[in-house]
Structures are given as structure tokens and as C-alpha cells.
Length: 212
Image 1: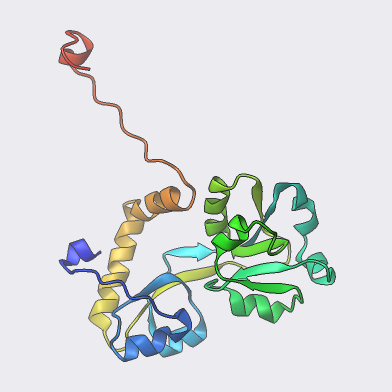
Image 2 (image 1 turned 180 degrees about the vertical axis):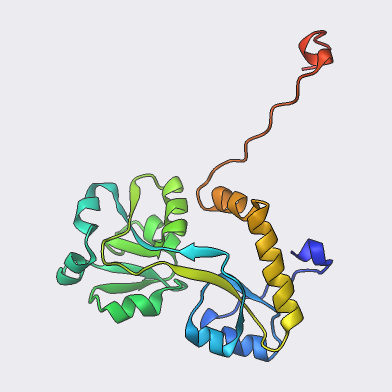
């Protein structure tokens, strides 16, 4: 996007809950990073088209998968603790469901790398969860029945800038059509490596053997 528009990117870390203020006060031009499209956010900012659906899920040790299949059972078990990373985009939705054993973690990495268990399961989007299990295959991903439904992930833009909104949405649509968004999703979320196309048939290579 930045290359296409000839602009230089400056990354600014902000609290996503404060996205509307940062946009209104011109601290940033666009807010990225797994924002869930909500009515409240739509009232305070301009939302882009959705570029992905976020599916809340649980990451758990492989051998305990059967205990986390139904969310109602999880809620009724006072001994289970669910870890929530400090920057998790569904924090408020999880808290509204009312599980008592919530434990706030500094990051998702802390759940996987702590020498002592910090929680029985970690709440993440399924997309991020699958990426973590590539690095930690002893864990698996479960979407319990009765859990939070998928939500659209969007960019937040300043209000009152229809030209910018139109450009961002058109860019997203073109990237969907040309497969670029799927390619990025496969690489960064699913961990698939880009396959190199084999070189086309060549007399010099196949017949004469002058090159490999």
C-alpha cells in the first residue's frame, strides 16, 4: 500500500481501545492490528471493508483437547483458567461471557514459554493460534461449541476523508481479487511457504545440458 502510494511508513504503537482519539487528533492516519469491526468503533471512526474474519479459539495442550469442546462445560468448571493476552482483540467479549477463571497475561508468548503453566488454555484468534502451534506442535487449537462467533477484522480510518476511505477499500478489493491477501494469510498465519514455479522447458537446459 505504502509503496503504491509513494509514502513512507512510520509505525506508531497505540492502545487499540484509544484508536478513535489518535485518529481524531491526527496522531496516526490509519489503525491496523486486528481491529474488530464493532458498532461503537464505526460511530467513532470510519471503518474499512473487512479484510479477514477473526475466529476466537482456544490453544491447549494436545492431550487435553477433549476437555475444551463445549464452552458451557468450561464455564461450569471453576478449576479451569483461561489466559488472555494483554493485547487480545476479544477481551471485552470474553469477559461478558463470564468465565471466572480468567488470567491476564503480558503476551501470548508468555503462555508458551513460561517454565510454569500460566493457564489451562489461551484465548486467541484461530488464525493466530494456528501460527503458534507451528512453533509449538505440542499444542492444538479448539473452537468450542457455543464460543464467540467470527467477527470482521478492519482498518480504522479518520472520519470525514471519503477519498482516503475509497482508496483503502479499493486497494483491499484489488488485493482480494489478485490473491495477495490469501497469499499473505497462507504465509503468515498458516505457515505455508511460497512454492517456487519450476523453470519452463528449455532446449539449452533439457537437451544440451549447458545450464542447470
